[in-house]
Amino acid sequence: MLVLFFASCVSNNENKTDSSDIRIVDGKEHVLTKAEKLEDFILALDSSDVNSVSKVTAKFKELFEDKEDTLMNDQGVSIILDYLDKVSLYANRNVFDDKTNYESLVGIEFDGGKKSVPSELESVYKAINSNGFRVRQSEGMFSLQQNPFYLQEQFYPYISSNFEIYLQQLGKENMEGYAEDAAIAIPYQSLVQRVIWWEDFSKATQNTVVGQEAKEQYNRYFTTLTIGMDNTPAIESEQIAAYFQDAYNYLEDFAPQSQTYQRLKNYIALLESEKIDSAKALVPGILNEQ
Image 1: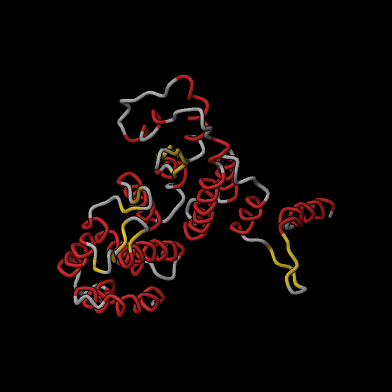
Image 2 (image 1 turned 90 degrees about the vertical axis):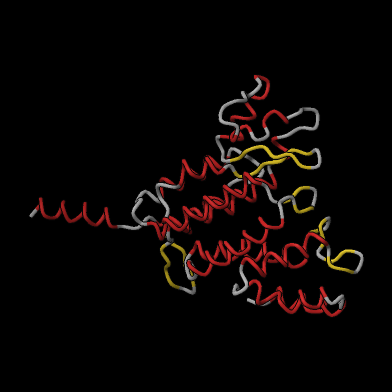
């Protein structure tokens, strides 16, 4: 009897939920999911501290130890990607100072080991690289950008094949570039190809975590293809800009049956007919269309 009682106590203790994992929602107990625990952990961190990313990565591996549960793991990595975006915005002033030239660190991850880190920048580069970032330079300013190699090393073993494809595409675009000084920095063919790639991928993965992420990327590129950027506008001097005329011609040839072309077809026709005001009037509806 004593042995049975002891075994029962051990079993009860093992199954007991930690009180810190419980919330009261509408008067009822709610046991936190792994994703919610990770979000709570992140809330306690300082997003202006680049070193916080390695802490989040360690916490992810602690919580999402089951590499087979890719559905749950995709949620966790999605949360981390959002946090990386925040850190890339808020940690710049703590990482870089105006008196130091970091140009030697730009693109160092992609040069096949040809460049070495200067000794005076070793400590700052270690903090940047070991926390999932690389150095980007734009308008003479240095900033943090996600490092695709970090994502590959730390998270590929946990995520679904579709999420892996998603990260590979982000990494490819990261290396090729996209915009500089509020201007489009890629050929019009590349812009159109990216829009169509994200359209197709978001459709193929809809109703999933990665599908939601892909839809956001598609919307971002579609907006650029529609109205351009501050220094590369689609409408210039009250007429269609040459870059966008070429892009729209290429879109019609490359993907005439795509949702993207069908959404833009009337807009393009108005631009080409020099009915600029009418074309502008279509923009809000086009961008709000799902």
